[in-house]
Length: 492
Image 1: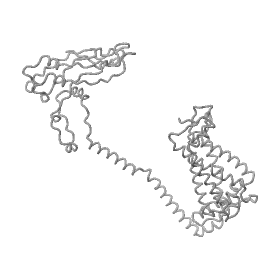
Image 2 (image 1 turned 135 degrees about the horizontal axis):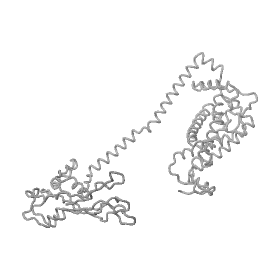
Image 3 (image 1 turned 180 degrees about the horizontal axis):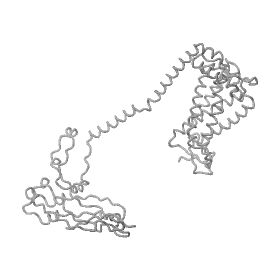
Image 4 (image 1 turned 135 degrees about the vertical axis):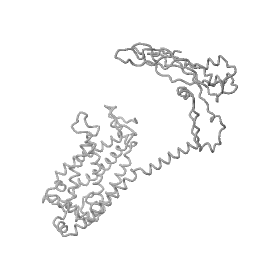
């Protein structure tokens, strides 16, 4: 009989498809008399049934043309192939002709792809095909075992087929997958749930804060012990006596705090808390609840939280500009800018005294210690400009054509600068409350040198209440109406 040969690419450049033949002669399959004679052969086989069983028509998968503009290859759409042999064990001694014909072939849907020609029909044209029915093994016909025992047993392996692999592959789509038993499904679900629980318990993120906290406690204890040992030595005592820790001030340095410094301290505290809050929210926010866009450029959208963060930044910059002008106009800069090299050994002395828990004498109305002076200098003249420049580079207000500052560098600096501010605030508040809280609050909020009055404490409580209220109101549902006055606010 003749069967089509699949031709591939040419073996030489510009040659014909290879092999050059399109059909080949193959020996016709034997009728299988030896197979069926002893086991399942009918004494008087039906000629029509035998002819139908010897060959079946199957669709051919056609590919791209072998020549430009040609027809899909191969030209034939179907082919006659030998029918699969039916095992004697699966045949009935006296089969019903109608039942046998229905059992030998099953109809399966064909996966149809794109047309072979522009505007054509999906290929292949046939939607279904007749394929040999799967063979049913003897184990599958056995009586169903008890439900309790079957749940614990492995499914029986299918009987080995004597047919070629092509027949087994063709029959596979018609064999439904065996569903998992409820017990097995429940067991696998329980394992997955248990595994997830174990994974969540052993996650490294849950233990990392405790590890870092323990390391900091150990380092602090070592620092305290080392400082107390050094102060107890003759060298340490002489160093503390020579450098008491007080800042060396010029004779013209002002004394006390003016009123403008107290209200600027409150506004700076409020804006700093709000900027940190909105900055952390922006860092964690995945899907904003509302967006803001300028009316002139409605496509340039940012989240409402980022809009609030930028507005607070602008207010903080304006406050800082006013603070700089008043700082240098009134001479208060001499209290936070080092004016002598002795500031640095005095700062070391103040740090050792803090670590030894025998803190240096302080009178903030008249002078700071040198460590405070250096800290305020870093905050006002280093960290603040760094935060402003890096934040401006990351903000939507930055002109796109200005590329002289790298966005990557700005992102690498902005968040660590915020962490520095947080650390400074924690240490600053701790020292305020442990070195005469009422005197410090009177100096910072009431501009008085009264160490026992309550005016500064009351003003501080009011300031904390205002900050807490602003912190709780910094949400899209409250910010969106205000943002809508300056642009378009949408939810997507």
